[in-house]
Image (tube, rainbow, N blue to C red; front, top):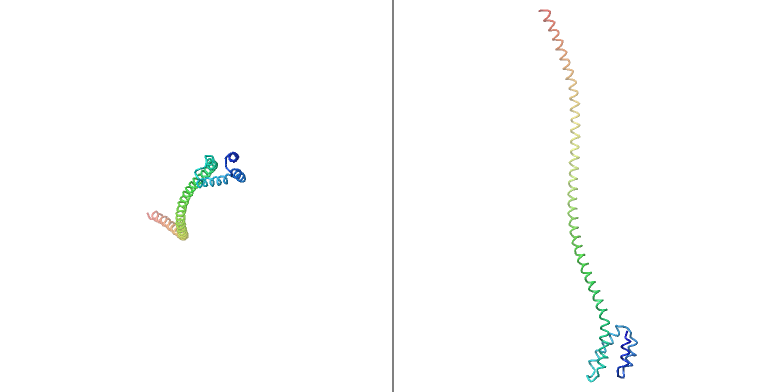
Length: 184
């Protein structure tokens, strides 16, 4: 990755060029290269202004090259972070609406439990009413059966009395007709 830079170091004037190229060959990583370039950029401020343009180019070029290499990684990382933040934002919105839905569902279940409680009370009193009504109806049926039995018994007696009275009346009418026919 830094081959062109090492070749550039070998062609630049200065006593420490070979040492720097040899030293940079042990650090092929981009992050370490960026760190060394940043150090070279800081060293630039402590050097006298009588240096040639080649040294300025030598100090600025690795820094901008490493920055250009690290910038897409940083942008992709920031894009991933922003995507993750968007996902987390929508997840928080979803969880918020889910909590609202669960809240209203708990309210609905609460009122449903109250309704079922009152319905159970109503059914309990209805069962008590129906049981008492069944008792009253059974008592009424027993009394009615007793009354009908007594009435049937009295009707038999009454029918016997009516039959006897009709028989007596018929005999009396026969006797009266015979009496009238004999004496008239």
